[in-house]
Length: 106
Image 1 (cartoon, helix red, strand yellow):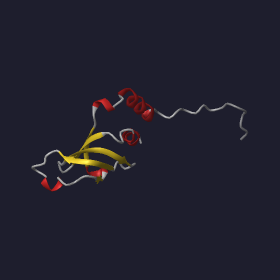
Image 2: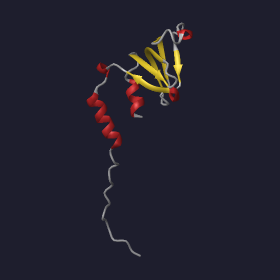
Image 3: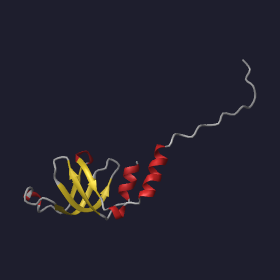
């Protein structure tokens, strides 16, 4: 859930999405869901000569399982907040204190 929460804060920001088939798309992050599927608007293809069929693409939905990387501007990342959230998510569960109330009868 940490990544989902993090990407929700980036909605409306410019990102680059590299797919597993080496296509790189840039655009504005429109939405993201719990499976890390993303919707981009104002899409453009980085390598226009290699993928001319994608030049007319304006909006797209990208399934999370085909994403290799999502590149975001460094200025959009609050590293302190992200590190704190990661620590909290990976912290061991708090140990419950056992009460030593009365004695049990067999």
